[in-house]
Length: 118
Image (tube, rainbow, N blue to C red; front, side):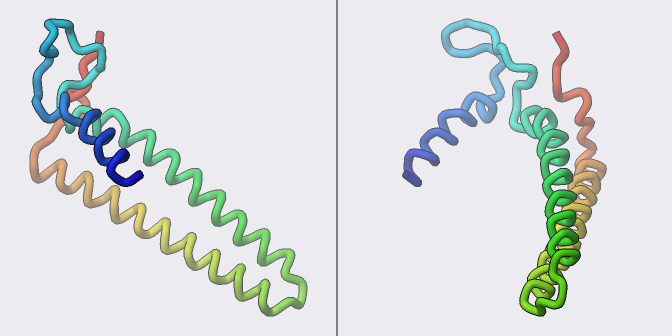
């Protein structure tokens, strides 16, 4: 199974690594990006939104566990652990976005120009 996943990943990523806007058969690229950076620029906002919504849901789940613990120390401990993990997740998410934008600034990458518009 692991080999299949690696094979599919290599198969999907190869056209972007080759950085060729025209495929070997002479057809034009139907995607809006030609490089790995363009792929990252297209999918990073989607990934950030999904992570943000997931973290908010996890935080709300921890709050629900806390409210429904009602004198059950084991459930209260689980709720506190869930809330702590959600806060750590928010902090790591913020660090990830900060590092991404810092590296973009250092490497002088303009993400809006990497996605071509039709």
